Image (tube, rainbow, N blue to C red; front, side, top):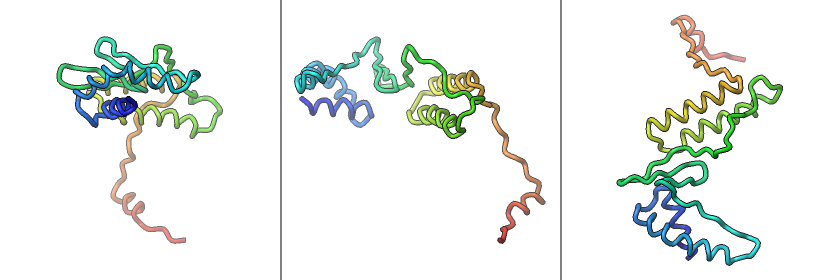
Length: 155
């Protein structure tokens, strides 16, 4: 039965068909029983689909009549607190949290409305933690400045 657990993980990564998802979900109780029999002090639990949704790590998987759809999952106790921009803390630590948020956003194939919703959440998190969120425009260089920028510097 342990091989069935591998099918579940592969399915959620989109590597096998939706038919395998159904067979995997039918066998989940048997797999859970086998895992929990390994050691008495080591007990596993399983997320169960509710209203065609299944939370798996940091994503929610939605089952539609024709395919599976994903969105970012946030726990009910989620707070939008990261290290505030104004705190006297190493800058790289502050921006690592921001990088994590954007990496999560760009790691999954989200529908356009889910992507925009998550982007709005990230902007709210940044705003609530005093991060500057105005987009920076690239500097416009005149042809003379462009020539200076392209001139190699010698030591």
